[in-house]
Length: 169
Image (cartoon, rainbow, N blue to C red; front, side):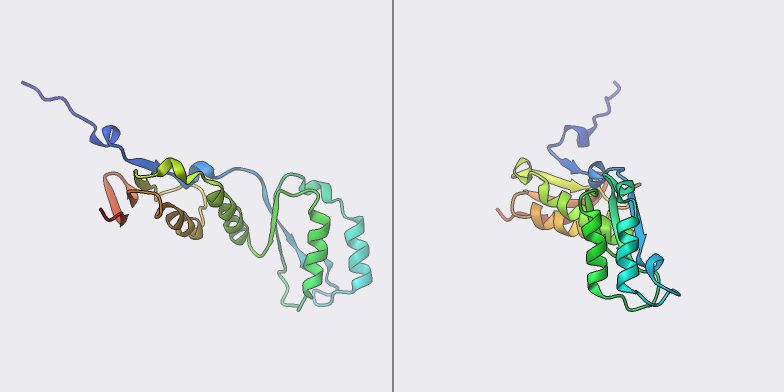
């Protein structure tokens, strides 16, 4: 008599959270402050302000922007703030630094917006592998938000997970 194969994972109460599901393909672009430096070293306020006024900021409409400076010049803090003031009406989010820094800021918002009440008293597995760049910080914030509500939290895949937390009975 043949025994049927039963998918125990599919029949379990285990809930999988895949942060890749929250990743969106909204363009992530960088603005290099070095483009406004004279000889790559000097920021002249008057010409800088004029260049910012002339720039078409609408090209950044509905995008995420990372402001950075590829030059080793010392650029005053107000300069990136001025760039941000021009960007603000057009972008969804901006940060100072790399695209990775920008993704961290984006995912911080995403993880904070999740309704964690749906995970109350449930065993959770946080999917580990991803084809999208999910910042490590997103996982750190996710476990911090899950711990007060979840029955247990694991990381990885159902067939090979690492236990992270189990609520005491």
